[in-house]
Length: 321
Length: 282
Image (tube, each protein chain N blue to C red):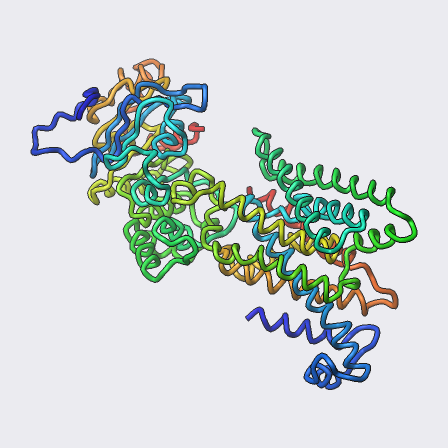
């Protein structure tokens, strides 16, 4: 049911941009296979398809990670960026770029940075008692995110201004324009490695939204399940960040929309988040590269949508609780 | 076989079944801070044991220990005759269920999904609820008279209905023992009675029920036996008749006359007292 908007968005993304294509041309180029000749063939197969695929994967990864974090922290206001995971992964990746490491190391560094961030946020939040846990988690995430952000700034100062700095800055803005098929070949399997256990454990993940005592009394090993889930969600976030930079807000907004459409039960929430996230990011990216004569940074567009939605959610949750 | 002997369980009837849930010489607490000590407790199948005690008497810590969520500092807990640490988590969930206070959930799960979660201990690690699981969940909802709420969000039903759904979840868990933590707190008068009425029927299903409450009249209404917990010790245990004004005065540390005045809840105009009473808990 949600597959339709994904196909529709991808089709629009395929034909629009700086070099608009007629639907017929795009379709025939697509059907002609990767060796299609002519300008349409090059545009479709070399430029647009990898970018659309990257958009689908990154949007899926960030949204599913967001849905998982929200469930396991029993908090609809957290997301990879609010928990500082994106900043942590960003610092890891920036460090690896600074040291001139290959893509695989950038990925690994992003994963470790992300785990460090979510680990410290959770540890701090678990120790603070007698405060609203939602507030503590969000504030701890902001603090940790800022700390890792400062680390990123430091890396930028240290970076070679002619070669590394532009590439780090460009990458940090968040966008799909620099992603190559090779990047995808590394990131996609990592994202699937994070996704597969989540899909297998999808029923049990529902129980993490209850109190730990309740979940344990119903027969699950809460600590192990939560650690597994943190590792999976962080892996997905890190894989997305290391190829697309820090694209904020998707991991917060999309799971919410998905929950409204499909309900909170994870076996429905997960596919809904994945499809909606992919469609949202491809749509935003298409807008970013065709709305103005210059290409807009993708992170700017997602923030324009995401920040107001976050504020609206905050106001609403304050009223009901 | 019966080392404690502290609880009055001498029944001459032919070989009484071994208690479903039993604590012997139990000390409860967190690491080095002992909250309760020397606790002997038995709940048999089909029996409702009501635990009364003031705030801070160690009820919650005792429950968490009985559920295996906190290790016992001393003594043993036996579930179905087998020591608690020997039970694997999922297997224990099929024997022993916990009904927490019906607090708000962060996400709008349907009542059916909430009850289905109780089936997790019966499911394989990667499984989804089967048709049989749904059927059992449906029967549990039926048994508590809330089958019509099945598709509703747990955020939009009343507190009493949510509490009943949590009891239904424990039934769906098909456990032989239920531990209920103040199931009527934060409910209005009508919902308290509705929840109590359903709890009273659990004993008839052969389930061993241990529940805590802040309201002695609730113990009088449903309990087969009552235990008084004070400062981490079971100070008294017996039939309902032990719940009288002097005993409650000693337990809660108030003037007996106050209790005598309050316990004679007249029907009619003054029934609202119960309501304001419940608001003052917690």
